[in-house]
Image 1 (spheres, rainbow, N blue to C red):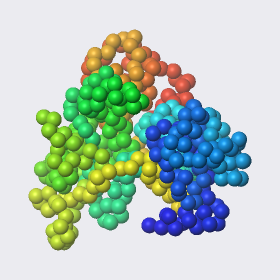
Image 2: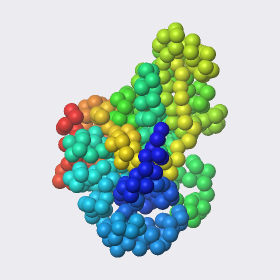
Image 3: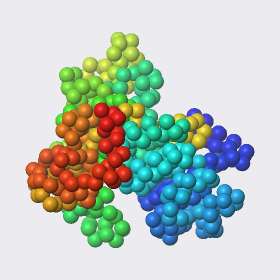
Image 4: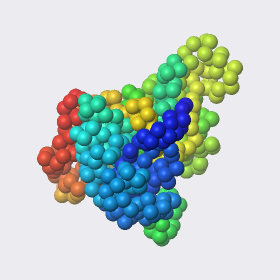
Length: 445
C-alpha cells in the first residue's frame, strides 16, 4: 500500500533503483513510457538488437533525446541519463545495474539472461513468460540459490492472477479456480499466420501497415499464449492444470461463481484448485454477455454457514448453492504496470509471482498432419500450438516443450492434434536451452 511513498523516499535520498531493460518492443515500450515518470527508479540502460529502434521507441513514448546520449554505464549513473546499446550480457554484468528486465519474448534468450543474472547477482523480472513456461521452476531455484529475486512481470496476466490467488488465500479462502479471459473457438487451434487476421476481423493490409506481427498475434488466438500463461500461474501457485487441457468455457463476469466451480457442483472445473481460461465467445460465435476477454479472475469457497451468510449480506454473486463466489479484474495494463514488479523487488525484496514447483507444462501439438523432415516453426506458426497439461503427464509421455519446437526437424510423421515427443524431433543436446530444460526435468522429476 505504500510503494509510492517508499519510492519517493528513495528518490529524495538519492538512492534510486538502477534498472536495465532488455528488449524495447511493445511491452518494453509501455514500461519506458512510465519509468521516466516514476520517482525512485533510474533506467540506467536499454539493450536491444537495434539500438536505433530502441531510441525511436523511447522518443515516441516521451523521452527527451538528450537523456539517451550516455556513452556508457558509468556516465548514465552519474548524470541520470540512459545508455542505449546492443549487448544484453554487458547490461547484466554492469555494476551500475541492480534489476534486469527481460522483455525479449525469446525463451532461449530469457533463459540465458536469467542465468547470467544469477551469476552476477542481479534481480530479474521475467516478462518473457515463454522462458518461464519452458524452464521457470529451475530458473527460480537458481535465483534463490544465488540470493537474488526472480519475478513474473506485474501487468501481465500471470502476475495479476497470482496476486488474486494470494489475496484469497491470505484472507483464509480456498481458491477453487483462477485464470484469465480470451477470445476462443475450437477451430482457432488450427489458425495460422495466413488466417489470423480474418479471425480478428482486421484487414490484412491494415495489419501490415501497422507493423503487426501475424505469428505473434496468432499465438494469442490459437491457444498457445493461454497455455503458456496458465503454466506460469500453476507453477507459481500450485494450482493444477486440467488433465485434458484448457477447455475455454464461455463465461461472463456474472457467471464466474457458477461456472468456475467443480463439475460435481454444477460448474466447469474438473476439481477444486485448478487454472482455466474463459472464452469471450459462445461456441456458436456469439459474444458472451459481459465478457472478461482482457481480464483475470479467481473463484473461492465459503465452506461454512457463517461465510455463506456474509456472502449474502454483502451482495456477492455466488453459485446456486451460495458456497462459491469470485473476484475479477476487467483489464490488465501490461507494461504500463511493470514498475510494480521493479518496486516490489527493489523495496521489499519480493517477487510479484514466481515458480515454486513444476506443476504444469506446455507441449507442442500438431495443427495438421506433419511429415518427417518438416521443420517446426514454433509459437503462433503453421505447424504446432501449445497445449497445457500437468507436468507429470508431460514427463510421462516425454512431451516436447513448445518453447523448443522451433527450427527442429521431425524424424517421423505426426498426426493432426497429436502431442509431440522429444523422440519425434532431431535436437541438439548441447544447445543451452535444451540443456537447461533437460536439467529441470531431471531435478523436478
